[in-house]
Image 1 (cartoon, rainbow, N blue to C red):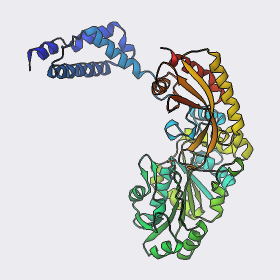
Image 2: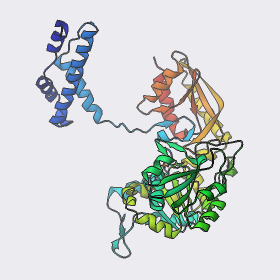
Image 3: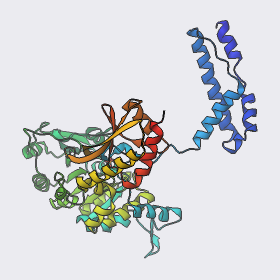
Image 4: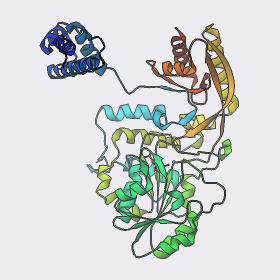
Length: 471
Ligand SMILES: *Cc1c(COP(=O)(O)O)cnc(C)c1O
């Protein structure tokens, strides 16, 4: 080691010295001694590495005093007390943005979460009989009423639902899936991998673009445990294509006494074609086609909390419920409370459209979105800032969340062209606000898509832009 780094290392403050300073600053009201000591050690270690590195690059050694080091430690500890999981404003126009938490919850769901989880509940207690109850039975009746299913079960999310169903029905056996449906949903959820984790063997049939019912039939053997159909949620194969209908698969399953499963992905409970969206089969329609078991998400089109919904025939559901994996994948009480409140809205579809923000955003007429864009535009104009130019433009929003990938939803944005910084810089500043505004950049403008921004968020958007556009 050379002289320079030696003297640099010598200048490093002692841990005890930093801790004494921190004690005077009352740090122990914020964190226990061990944590403060560990943090001091990490900070000093980082400094040590910096000194060695700068010596190698023969730059001047920095001098570190105890007070500056204590500042750093104090900053780290204080940061631990602030929330990292933050509310954000979704100005992307992607309605079910998986990275932004998918569906916002309705107010009834929020109320119920507070009411149920602040104290005790009958989560697993049958009040009628005074004995142990079953947690998912709280939403079972509602799900049967809304979808026409024979039986229902809910778990942590749809990925869990798929895993549980395949494991129950095809453990150690084969599950037949079309090559056109071996999808990746994102976040490492790939059908072939889920198969392996479910201890089932994937039996691929057909080709990427064409799979016939005869392909399935030829693949059936004594080893077949399951015929599976997967909704190609987030992409479409177009052109020279063919797929076996659910009805044909159901008939085939009946003939060979093999259960047929449909992973529907997005749980669409009401027909959306009236609103100019592509036809997305509803859960009720799909079940009516006779599948034995169907799975879908709670937080995609359904508009509730993260959950996996399993619907289907009673005997099949009985088997799934008894699988020990079910215990590992179980739904928690907060989710259950929110899901129940969300589902109640569906007893009247108009009410669901009105109260569930994702459905509202999906079906709102473009003219209403345009009006909202005009309103925000005027508020921003009123700011009288010379730091940006604002305009209202037509644009395209998206459903997101791996649902309706080809749906083109016309929308309106307020485009913001900053004068003194790049659009990329403005996007970053908005993202780093205390209440972040997530917007997309298009060339030298950022776009605030009004399909996903509600009027009660205008105040935050205006304030955020004002702050970010300052030098
Ligand atoms: C989204 C999706 C899943 C995964 O559902 P999560 O609720 O995200 O766990 C599984 N299958 C399909 C077809 C999907 O679209």
